[in-house]
Every structure is written in structure tokens, then in C-alpha cells.
Image (cartoon, rainbow, N blue to C red; front, side):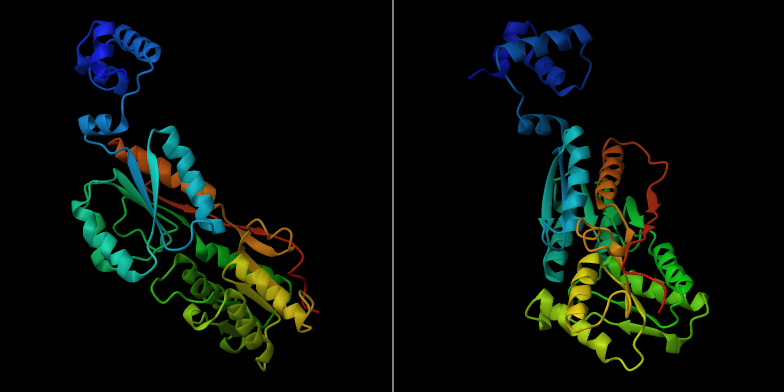
Length: 341
């Protein structure tokens, strides 16, 4: 097996020069760098990541923290976007799933002494004050992707939920719907997610447009642990909508996945969508166009890329001109929201 010493001897330079040349660091002339690279290629030598990391003091790894399965629409798209940027910049992406608040606390408690990553991206998690304080004291940069707030993070990439809900309410108002509501996803009692901001934003927008309290309905998300399955949670929400004495003529739903499942559950019991109940979702995921769902479009893959770009800039010791980015959701008009009949 070819060693660093072999390459140095063949190139006529020191071993430290070979290391600097192949890592792209230190004072090495272009001619020497090219000669070393040519010898390394000819001898099929690759500088190990661990050796390079030890010499540079960097791990060339980024931790990306999730609270759900990696194969959900949002998480997988965000990770894909981050990976595209980080791989191109020479970093490995290490996903980490925290399933409970205890997992999250344990992760944050270990962060100050953890040297296994050069930076971190935290996805869709609301942090407590202790965790915010830990982030503020870290020597590595952190980015909040779909964060509820900017506190503690070096940078954030978020969607403007207030403006998104304003667009949804304006649409329903323009279509003549006077009784409207919001349907929340089932709750994970261990975490508060950024999507939970949407119900409050919905009601703020509705009140600002002249809706009275009696015009508005909230179908709160119940503890998901009390349901046997996602479909059970959907059926329970559908039953609450059907059973309401003054049923709304239109609802916004926290996510497209829940909106699509709810739409089919309602149709099974004879409620027509959109004739009896207009529905507006949030996400514009891969199934939304197939279901003809009117929704608010967000792009988690773009959010992942932007988060990684900010993090790479910070890991390179540079300053961000715009550390906290707020993206706008766009309203996609399809068949599930029509004028009140």
C-alpha cells in the first residue's frame, strides 16, 4: 500500500508538504501542488479523511438534527438540499434523529464537549431557554431550518407563516366563505414544531379581516399517542368536523398529508369537497397536485440548500450578510377551494 512517505519520496518533497498540497492548505506553490497531485494519482494514493481532519482540527462533518423519520416529505427534501451543498464543499452529512424530549436534552447537554462536527442544522424544533443558551455558547455554528424563532442560532431559514395564512384567509374570504376553520395535525407531546404557528397566524389573519369569533372554528390536534394509527387520527378529526353544529364551509389544514387524508375521509361519509367543505392545505408535496388540493407551496429542498450554504460560509470563518432568511409561501389554486354554494 502506498504511503505518504512514498509520495513524498517520489515527488522530492517532505511529507508535510505532501499533506499540505493534498489538503489545499498552507504555503505550497502551484507547481509543487500539481507535482504532488500527479504523483499521488499515479501511485493511487488518497489522503485519509481522518488524517486530514487531525491535521486541520476539523472533522469535515455536519450534524443535521430531526425529530421524525428521515423519509417524510419535508425531512427527506431538506436533507437532499443540504447534502447537495455540503458534499460539494467537502463535508459529510450525519443525520441524527431525536425521538423524545429526553433525547433532545441529552444531545444538547453533550454538545459543549462534543467535537464530532464542525457545524449543525436543526430542523423544525422549538428549543427551550437552556438549549438556546447552549447554542449561543457553542464554538461551532448552528442553523435553524424551519425554526420557530431565531434565538441561539447563528443563522436561520424560515417560512413566513403569518403571510401564508393571510393569503389563505384572503382566498376563502374572496370566495364568500364566512364560517371558516383551522385543522391542526395530531400533537407529539414531546415537541413543539414550527407548523404549530400556523393556527395562531390563521386566526390573527381572520380577525384582521373582520371575522367574528362565532365565525371561526379550531379543530385542535390531539395527542398522537392516543391513536392506533394516522388514519385513526384523521377519522377522529373528520368526525369532529361533521358533528359541529355550525360547521364551517371552508378549512385550512396544517399539512397537505393530513388535508388529503381528511378529504378522502370526509368524502367517504358523503361530505362533498369542495361543494360542502372547501379545503386548503400547506406544503404542496408530491401528492398535492394528484389530489387537486389547493395549498400553500413551500420548498424544503431549497430551505436545506440555503441552510447548508449559510453553514458552510460560517464554518469557513466568514460573516453572513443575511443570517436570518424569511421565505414566502405561494398560494397554489386547485380544485378543493371554490366559491361558497
